[in-house]
Length: 497
Image 1 (cartoon, rainbow, N blue to C red):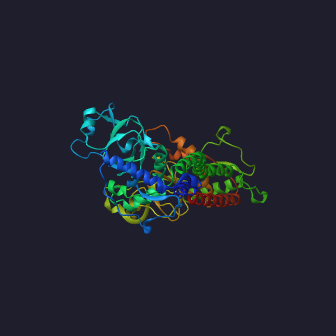
Image 2: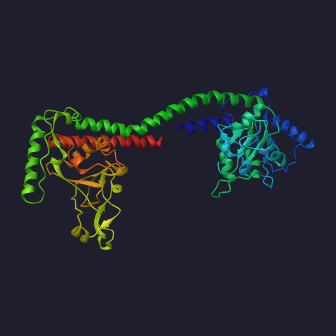
Image 3: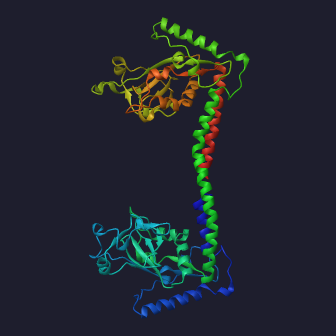
């Protein structure tokens, strides 16, 4: 259960009278209600508040759940005044406010269930305050947001102040601190938000009228039980907060888990530690010689341009030890690497055809099935774009996507920001793909230093790669794919929690 769900469940128990026991000697909610009504009448007689229009009695059909027999259902207006601010000509313009004077409270100032006196707190002059006809705050009031951040609330700790147009004041008829504390508990219960949903006008900006807020249902326990509910919640919420910190840490770990686990496993794989070596499968050196012969034949037939000889791999270039049956090779030696091109946009006949033209944004770190743009046969014939066969491995060379990968599921061309490798048929292309993924951070480092990150084809093909026998490559890839499925399942399960 998520921390907020747990908190809501506990608050729901509290508001249903199931968190603490009822004690007959503490009286009833009905008795408390009558005392509050007497206090209300005294305030009316003294002219301190106006007589309110009576709402209809609460019917059984309106009640959302059962409460203890010693409690009483009330409407919010039975227990406190709901006071609007001054919306007339005396409402102070923001430009006239400063950081000294009498606080003028908006929803922005409500933080952690109180009013924060930080740099966002704006103030009015005494004259502006005196000119207001309503919306004046007293210490102990609760400010409640009825627009925008609907339901946000906070205790007012200062001697006086005034409210902005998005707020109303909740001022209890009873000055008993226990009731104020209980009222603040009520304001974060699922019941309160269910009442908001009932009366929210449903416009683009959440909006609630003060008159509808007065109709909100609230269960009323005796004062002593209110105290015990509040005290019990304080104790429980200390534990819930600890649970929340643990949960947040767990979420962080789970967010990091797939990436960090994948990096670790990939490192194990390319170091020859993921699967066992089998002597009957030959060696990487033997495979390397076969791949060299393949390239020579392509060069002889004119299907591949002969490249300059690459320098032999020296000890300083080798980042880690590999099994004796493996060998180190340069990426240039295991395939044909070429960057793509962009047919001139000035020629509309080059675009809108049926040949996929891949850009770095189309790379998915997996199989590439679809792209966002296509070119024509004419573009393929007249420009330097190359049609890369199915199974080619691609890597982004520029910008924010540097190091992003893909494997073609059908023939495609690319733009110049992609480098495509037509992989030797004697090498498993998915092994190359996983090696490039394991080396992504190194490629990104190599691309740093300029205004835009950029890794050249030369830097890619000169990179050293450990080469296992082909059957071992297949076993490595199979193992990596199985582990990847498990990691994905773990993520799905965590997201459901």
